[in-house]
Image (cartoon, rainbow, N blue to C red; front, side):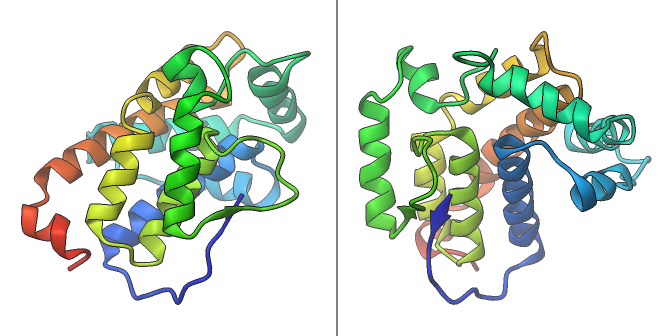
Length: 210
């Protein structure tokens, strides 16, 4: 959804993993997984000795992918996010923060995106506060070596206050089967991000990626 032209730096392993998870969430929330991605998810083999929310989420996602078929995923995504008129869930920051679409949080987001050098691709019709777009921005900020302070500010202003509620709603949605697992991963990862930013020293936040 977003374009940003920049030379990609070499990333630490932790940052590469964070960028990859944000990119995966963006992809899953933009469209149902098909083909190679579904096969890749089915083949995930998390460490069975690791008992953490993220490890459990990866295991659940792999199991859900193994038992999913493309047409089923298309139908599930349609019911959850599109529907007739609207889907079961509204994956937009404005909806969760104000109860309406196209409100002040979107205005503030567009200002921040412009300052960061992002622009919406012309073929994308959804507003920029879609959860997939916000995850994509976070992935690009990390991949392009934007400092931890910038990452934290964007996450804090545009994801922290509502993303966990969305992912909890996704886990509990009536039409969710595969996407229950996607919601579990999203919720576990956002909590991990919260903890990770809290553990960063002020020097790291001010100095960027070290």
